Amino acid sequence: MIELILDGLALRVAAGSTVAAALYLGGDGSSRTSVGDQRRAPVCGMGICQECRVSIDGQRRLACQTLCQPGMCVETHA
Amino acid sequence: MNEDFDLLIIGAGPAGMAAALAAAPSGLRIGVIDDNPLPGGQIWRDGVHAHLPANARRHRAALAAAENIRLFSATRVVAIAGPQQLLLEDDERAWRAHYAKLILCTGARELLLPFPGWTLPGVTGAGGLQALIKGGVPVAGERLVIAGSGPLLLASAASAKQAGAKVLRIAEQAPPAALAAFALQLPRWPSKLLQALQLFDASYRSNSHVLAALGEERLEAVRLQQNGKLVEIPCKRLACGFGLLPNTHLGQALGCRIAGQAIAVDQWQACSLSDHYAAGECTGFGGSELALIEGAIAGHSAIGAQAKARALWPQRQHWQAFADRLGRSFALDPRLKQLAAADTLVCRCEDVSYGEIAGCSGWVDAKLHSRCGMGACQGRICGGATQFLFDWPTPTPRPPLSPARIESLLQLAEPDEAG
Ligand SMILES: Cc1cc2nc3c(=O)[nH]c(=O)nc-3n(C[C@H](O)[C@H](O)[C@H](O)COP(=O)(O)OP(=O)(O)OC[C@H]3O[C@@H](n4cnc5c(N)ncnc54)[C@H](O)[C@@H]3O)c2cc1C
Image (cartoon, rainbow over all chains, first blue to last red):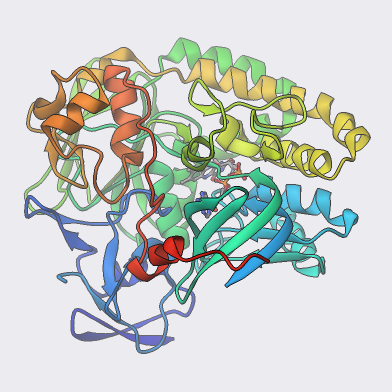
């Protein structure tokens, strides 16, 4: 198991899980807020649609193409 | 930093792996670039909840064992940095790859079409849900509906059921006659017939499509047109995809000729641009069997092993016939163009609605009146949709080819320390 932080809360996930998986395991699955103020969640699962972009340790990354790492800090309201 | 390759391959799906392995005996320096954390592409996507077939494991082991093949995972193409030069970015650095020859194996993405509610959390692509599940997204005990078109609906349903989800309905837009004609042809490709029988699901309905995703903050139910009847199914997830679209972005940016919606290639898998090749689903959809054979042909051609390439032509023809059959059977019903309402968003990146662009004459006009296609996905999602909805040609790619860090892009301005 790997421990990471999602929106300020500690979360444990199986090693090899994507950050997209962590969004569902530790929250409601949503990843960002759109320009029209709607919450959005991962859609294409393969790095194309960019809906799953989150802030990881201050960098904008795609949740579906990033594997969880110990101590990672993921923000969906950045 | 710079790296030199005799042969650079973009994409580590079946096509890219087969291309690298076919070219490996030459002893040339081969690089394989892929933006996913692990090789495999779509069908052989690895992850905590993935079950890789033996053929996928064999390809990965052979790739790892070849001393002249270097795989760069979690690495994406950001820009064209000069003639036969690409700017690449991974989590830590940006670097230039110089190449003598390039093979594009960038695969395909799903065609996602706008309908009311499609932006609600809980709605994903069909293959998209499968990919998310493989990466560890939990669906056990969840009620879900799968909709859209093509064999991927059944593959996605199989993955969801294996992960413990309750698949309530699989809605295929194609009419029963088209599906029956397809099924009758399947014995020509016995492995596909077997696959179809294994994947068959009692909740499958033809002549059925999504009308709306319902819910406030997230998906609560799906409204379907099911063989002429209106039905509503309460569910937690809707996985909806309308077939596959070749990823031509990089090929277009390089100046390779596009035919229809795919990168144009000749019988050697060579593009219109010399020293550039393309294979697999970026040249038109066709499944992993065709991708593997096209990849091998491209790999052999690129190193001058023409006889070996030619020997694979009959196999390519066999699987191309299957792909053509598939394309005809799952042709999209033009009525699907009417799914979006005026306030349905078409561009999910910039929240531009159908009503805002429906009267526009094309991409230039749409971009003058709105920010449609100008967001993070660079029109990859709304570009596919507007092509189907309005017959607009795919928008011309602009650099950066995918969102990149400023430091990476600054490298483009630096003089190239060749070699
Ligand atoms: C979401 C999805 C799920 C699918 N699931 C199945 C299935 O279960 N069964 C089935 O038979 N078929 C499935 N398919 C069809 C599948 O695409 C083909 O069968 C097969 O994977 C095609 O092989 P390929 O090598 O041409 O492309 P792909 O397997 O798509 O591989 C292309 C690779 O290139 C990478 N790439 C693309 N552009 C870049 C870039 N600019 N920089 C870096 N890397 C890049 C992609 O991320 C990908 O890893 C699926 C398709 C999709 C879109």
